[in-house]
Length: 604
View 1 (tube, rainbow, N blue to C red):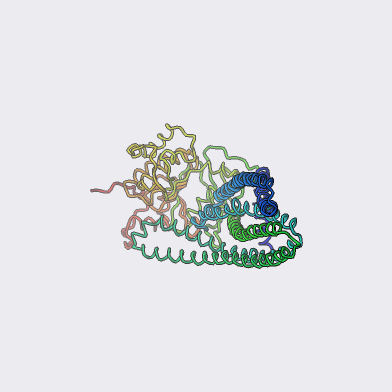
View 2: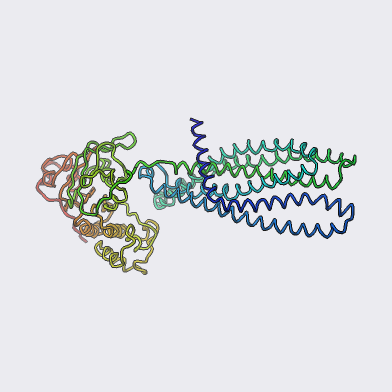
């Protein structure tokens, strides 16, 4: 299992390298700039010998004129090289990060509803923001510096071998030892970094939940409790961060010490050779300058390796999402569904969520244009039943058919174009009223948007806003009342003009006055559409052609209001609970033939 995991991780890293390779031209130009920087560093070390031997010891006036000019040219070229490699590598890095972030968001959007039910919103946000930013540091900064330092090491190694190959061999004996902390502490940093990223994701999720639920926190006086929870999470993150700091901080001192051993040996041995006359002071100091410059990029590689390990850890978390397969798979070459009135059939449908059967052997046919009401106690499977129609979930057994076609064998986008949904939760976006109504149909004209708003009884209150249809409605429509939000959602569904309509408890959270207006809007919305209405309030389904009662995952009763009342079963019990007190006797039970009472405005 561990080998398989390692192979997967290596494949992920290869994918990042492939993304990097796509920018080969810029990379080549950046590497050219890095070679200029590395060459200028090596040249600086090389010039120490002529500066000492020719100028200070030999007092050569010609070299005194030449060498300063050469130094100016070297540092001018070094500046150009540094700018070029910095710009080009950051362009490559930022572009790769953008593409990874885009891929991550696109894939998350394409995953089924079941994925979002299992994952926390804050954790997903952290993957796109925090984890991708960590990876950005690796690609645009660490990778760039690693390449530059490697070129510098190669250039300086050439100088020290050119100056004194025997002394160079002794100096390089210490170098492999200096790489030990890079490897060892890099492993520790990666392990701790994974924990830090997970803790940060948990913290982001916590912040999202407590900010969204701030009203409940204040209403129940739980501010101190949530503060304590936040402190506990930041304490855990602090401890993990300090472990990472320790691992990063230890690598540099160890390398400093090992480098100091090498330099001490070079001073002793090189100084001995100068004293005995087998080497010149210029050669020794040129060699010494190159070695000092050489140990600096080697030391930097330790810090860069830590950043790379953190980036690889973040990459694993990103690819954990990108590589996750969707349960909802589209058949290649699947046909489109033409836009027209549709019939919907549930053919022996059963659905299991994890290990629990939510629906069992559902047989149901809804004709085009029919209004079907779905009632039953909470947890019976009503919402799951309608969620199968747009393929938010796929059936475990059986099939859902539209006009006789299995919805798993048609284009998913085409299927969802046929369906409009209005739910109990009025999901709106922090955009203008116009954009929210036109959501899913941005090509609609201004006249169409206003007509949809009028049909949804929303035009009047929209017109009273300071900016009318251009008014921004706040996060999740926070500036609107419940009834106003729901009418905008109905206007959005009207504008989509889909032949299949799903109303999932669309009025259950409204007061009586708002519900009356929303009911009128819903009546306009349902005209000519195949409609599925989930309702707790039986008063809201008087317009249904047929009613089914769903309990314990099955359709237990089916028919008109009068027929279901006559059965004296589940529907009868629901009716009693809603329109009479539970403790009443059968003498006061409703007349089975009585129609569903309609809502009237409450008196003063």
